[in-house]
Image (cartoon, rainbow, N blue to C red; front, top):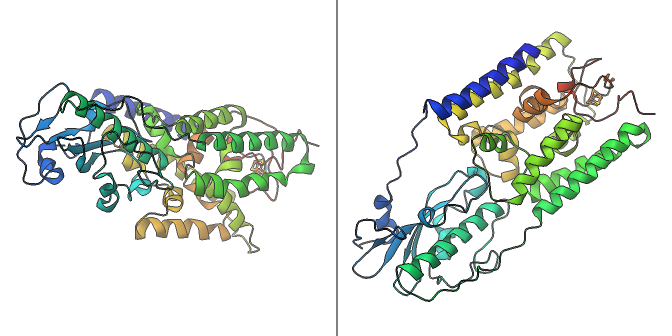
Amino acid sequence: MRNLKIILLITVITSIIAGYTMQIYVPEKKLDERVYLQEVAPDIKFSEKKSNPPHYKSNEGIVAFNTYDITPSIRGYAGPIKVLLALSPDGEITGIKILEHKETKNYVHYMERPEYLKKFLGKNVNDTFEIDKDIDGISRATVSVEAMARTVRESSRIVASNVLNLNVRHEGGKETFSTEWIIYILIFSLSFVFYFITRKSKKHLRIRDLSLVLSIPVIGLYLSSPFSILHVFNLLMLRPSSAYLWYVIIISTLISIIIAGRFYCGWLCPFGALSEFIGRLPFRKWSIPVETDDRWRELKYILLGLISIIVFTSRRVEFGNYETYVTLFSFHGNYLTWSLVVITLLANVKIERFWCRYLCPVAALTGMLSRKDSGYVSRHDCPVGNKPMPLISECIRCNRCYKGSE
Ligand code: SF4
């Protein structure tokens, strides 16, 4: 297993270097804005692209532009959301099309629909574009929707002022104060305190169930932000989000790995929680020989290695999106991904924490980075079916078997 982890680490580093330096990439569909001008302003003939700020202008005074040219620093969950906008001479939005984004499709599919984008039409550049007031919010895609509203508002005001010579409001629209990152910090801190309590005393082991129960509605359904391998891919490819929640999830998970190994898997992962509760149903579990179980556990590292090669060399994060919880908590997928969700959940009836044990890329990553702790010896009711004296990379820190507790 140690050799496998070393190979995985070398694979990831080599793939990142290859992706950066050798330009091995799968070309994305080349973006030609001019092709889409007809979609945002039908039957209008535009000039060549002009500068300061970059825009196209028609004889009728209609202006079209790519918001990314004007406000490149506004980012959604996984990078900028590039929008092609058309403005009338009096500063009204008359056409809109999302050109490109790298947000997780499962979460933002509704945002891309024409019926949703229509809500921006007719808005004036001096409107505030407030979410849930001027523009509908989309649950499970708050960060992306806010980023799109901001990029539309700020870029259109700059163009209206500099190209159309209109008077525009200079104060930003009222930013929606996001409480999501605070909620995440609260649930993380609470669970971390519980973790240390259960490490001290076995009398309180049941409080872990409270963290697991909370993680499903809060992290899974409300925040829709389980820690995902996509966070790591975006981070390593230097494509950070501008959302606090994104940073909070990454930093808290990193801290927890350094201090408590796979704490996230055992206490906060909503898919892990769901799997564990299904696994507690009173059905006899399959007895899997230790050697077979060990061999199958290596599969998650191999999968993570393969996916890393594909993602880093192609520089396309979406190729790494095979996590079942993304489908489940975004409520969006196809027949194949939904089948995978159902199979991986039902499998827990016979094999404890089936997905976490054999397939989860986050389990592989957090396991690989876990520090040694010889206090964990496993016991008959280990929630991940660990053998006695397990590898620390397979322990999700439920603390049931921790030797140091009374
Ligand atoms: S090895 Fe011990 S602490 Fe780790 S998951 Fe199993 S029972 Fe829990």
